[in-house]
Length: 294
Image 1 (cartoon, one colour):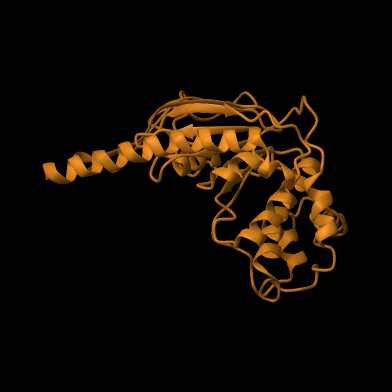
Image 2 (image 1 turned 180 degrees about the vertical axis):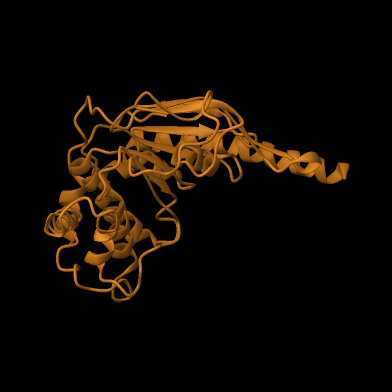
């Protein structure tokens, strides 16, 4: 397994010029609540994400990262601005309601959602089987191939409760990819994992990405994770959320764990940490002032 993980980590990135998964977020505005308790979560957030890119978003707690991801996913609309996917309007602008979640955008959340009474293979096949558009033998063949590409060969007939947390996370990601989404939305998917399992998941995700070529929009609080995985790291301000800085991570793929001790990697992490700390301090000071005012 260790040798396989090393191979995954060295997987080549998606080829330039991928044609699906380009996101354009323009002046996104989102409020929660009403009246005196109304909260401005996003305020004029703008960002372009290239097709096939791993774009990682970081920032202090409450900065609107998940709000932005949910808008892309179609879980809620915007109060201002627009989001386009491959030139098609998802929400905002002339669209009265947000586009409902579709197979072109799939979310993997922090907390697992595998069905414990189904095998890993059955979980992976769940979406296409429910849709009923593809013959079952073709669905099974694709599921087995994706599981093999993710290093899950031999786990097909096991149940989620019989496997490790890392295996379950990989199964969830593979299940998300079964519908060939243009964008894979990852909301801190590795947050609860121990450091060793998390490093294994980083390698697996890079390998899956190299095979699948989907755009990945990834949210995390782990700045080393952000720099290791991302071609760009987007730092958001404290609430209301805006894009404060986009850090282009000029570390070539394939990325191996030797990158973690390199000078460029440490410099990127240091730069991201400085900006996030600055915004977290502002949020803290604002909270202190609001507390004294009340």
